[in-house]
Amino acid sequence: MKLNIAVLAGDGIGPEVVAQAIKVINAVGEKKGHQISYQEAITGAAAIDEVGDPYPEATHKICMEADAVLFGAIGHPKFDNDPTAKVRPEQGLLRMRKQLGLYANLRPVETFPSLLHKSPLRRDLVEGADFMCIRELTGGIYFGEKGRSEDGNTAFDNCVYTREEIERILKLGFEYAMKRRKKLTVVDKANVLETSRLWRQIAQEMAPDYPEVETQYMFVDNAAMQIIQWPKNFDVMVTENMFGDILTDEASVITGSMGLLPSASIGLHTSVFEPIHGSYPQAAGKDIANPIATVLSAAMLFEYAFDLKEEGQMIRKAVSASLDENFVTEDIDKSQAKKTSEVGDWLAAYIKKNN
Image (cartoon, rainbow, N blue to C red; front, top):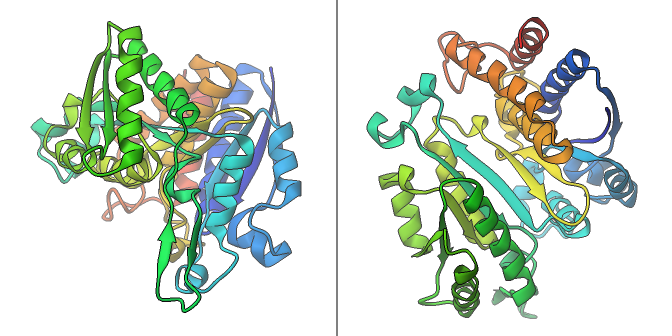
């Protein structure tokens, strides 16, 4: 099979972790006889430095022509620490999502048996936790009108959602619940926000179409508590953009490291596969970042973009083996830490020798 993958390494540790995912993709391709081609493109702070635009038109063209996008990370301290900056790396990420029509971010949260002792929660709370967070990605406060008053002392960010935007993400949530344990949690703030009341209204209208699904409604503050108290009670969670951004980062920590969890952003055009962590600029260039989240994003790439389930499972098997053997980076075990590149080499070698 011919696979055309756009590679947007981005900023910080992005290039390092993406390089390891490519090693693994190539190992799978070699094993299964796939022809894989890559088109590299710039984005984020690196693109601002080069062409003054965090998501150049040339990059968008490469993404649109690809079968899938493997993405690293966006962000740089020089922009984080300058609130007056007019052009920011994150604008590129938002524009990419909007222009590619990536309205749904899928973030699976699952624990690894060999790492349960690394979770900040008790073993009995997290063992067996396995749920899917579905975050609406192109609406809400991140994309609403924003600005400041003329004197600069008042700021505003508008949160806007349309019925169409809500219906399509809820439909995806119900469909994923049907494929899993048939339980859907709709997270909102309907006691305060009008947009949330529309979310809940539409969810209630749609629920009868999925009678096998147990649909529950939960305020976002309660959901934040229950993810910590009873993570195993969740199956599929669906929510709006900002709530999803916060809750999925919280959920990732129960696994023991944010460097373990992948994501897929899907929608109207080319899907994007990326780790949930940020650019981690403090580690950039040091060969110490955990590449597993990006490697598992590559597994999702095979599964979601090409429907190659066996290839995705090959990668998951290799990751589980590396964790079982404690061949890991310093965020998991400082005493025997391996380098980013060493983990990538180990995973690729495992795939070539096994499966």
